[in-house]
Structure formats: C-alpha cells, structure tokens
Length: 120
Image (tube, rainbow, N blue to C red; front, side):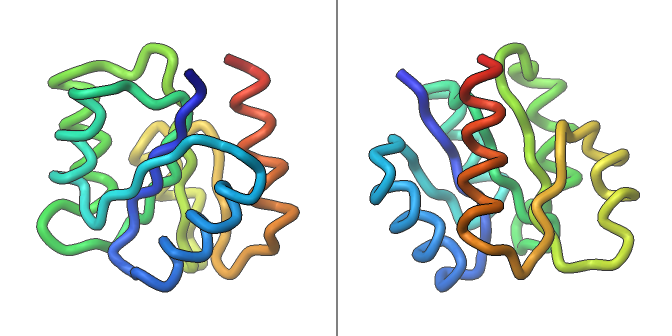
C-alpha cells in the first residue's frame, strides 16, 4: 500500500496536507515530531515522508539520523519541507531525496508526492 507520512509540528500545515492527500485518495498518516514519526515508521514503512526540519522533541535532521541508524531508508523517499533560505543545506544534512519549500502550492505537493510514489 502506498503511504505518505507527514511529519510537522504545525497542525495547520499538517491539516492542509492531510486534507489534500485525502482528496486525492492517497493513504497517509501524521506525526508532530521525529520521535513520533520513528514509531509510526516502525509499525508500517511509508513510501514517502514529508518532513519538517524545525520541530520540538526531535527535529528533522535528528529524525533522519535515527531513521538511518535504527531502520534504514530502503524504499522510503524523504522530502524536506522547510521555509528556510538554506533548504539545500538541510536536504544535504538529511540526505533527503527532495525539497518542498514552504509555503507551497497544492500542485507542487501533488507533483512531488506523485513523483516518488510512481518511482516506488
């Protein structure tokens, strides 16, 4: 089953992404920090992770390191979501597959998710 995991502490952004994915019939789950996301990945590996960088408890960079160390990334595309100007630096730190800059248009969200779902 294709699955997207949305990891962001901003509930408004999580709600928008969740609603957008639901409208397209894309199965998804949400987590509000990296620690909660690791637990969800352990239960069911997603195909795509949409990952915020700046979060409490466990930020996106620490999440990526923990994912690599504990579970590995095979079959998972990690997409960094950030509003920072140095998004490419975070993409590199996370060894992320792509970047979705905030704010984003829904068409951009759909395009990036579709690209990695189709690639899997």
